[in-house]
Image 1 (tube, rainbow, N blue to C red):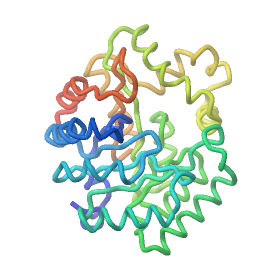
Image 2: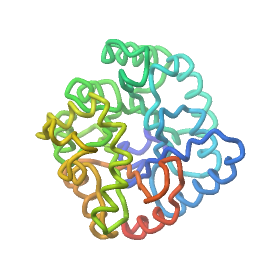
Image 3: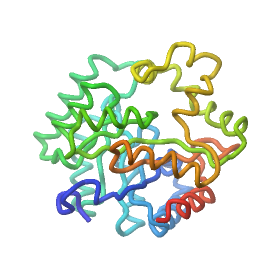
Length: 294
């Protein structure tokens, strides 16, 4: 189903998708494994695969080729790593081969992660201008948006927003900023682990990087957290707000809280204790699919 034909972007990707870094692994030796995994995830009923780790369109193409209907999205493509014309050319080629199967997620990344980082909002506006000039439809892209200005840009120049590491409270605020039309597809990270200490330890391994990035810490401050919440790997209060952990029922309740707050779709990142984020936690994905009744 194409986005333009679906009436709304939300109906094209459903309520639940998966966010994962390992699915974008460029190693040719893993190509068959990734294709087979994508086929299984489509069969399980997930509506979208979000490719993390500053992914590019070239990472999405093999998964789209291996499947028949699931949407594949970049979550996100960094505007500093890919020239706008290159992005437009790759988008057009993929669209010609597989119409309506790809959603372009764009973001400005972080000052700590790129030496090119300068005037990020203006840079995103310029990038969108270039995509417009190349004929890439606004309703086929979403923006990684945390703050008010980027949310407004998501509303005015894209299909909507794909916020990362947020809470249902942020989702409610984002929905108010976007209005009722645009797509709101937050990422939410979960750990299918009922032991609090083990679950929080797994969450903190992922949180460590983001505690160093001011775009995220500023977002959490706006949500009412304090600098004290960022110390010692993150307070239990911060961890429990940003990550869903527990058995399948509790995790589903945490995921659905985003839908209740105004999200159209939740891009779920599943962390498996003892595995790095580039892994493919297929057993947990199956358990989650059953819990979500896909």
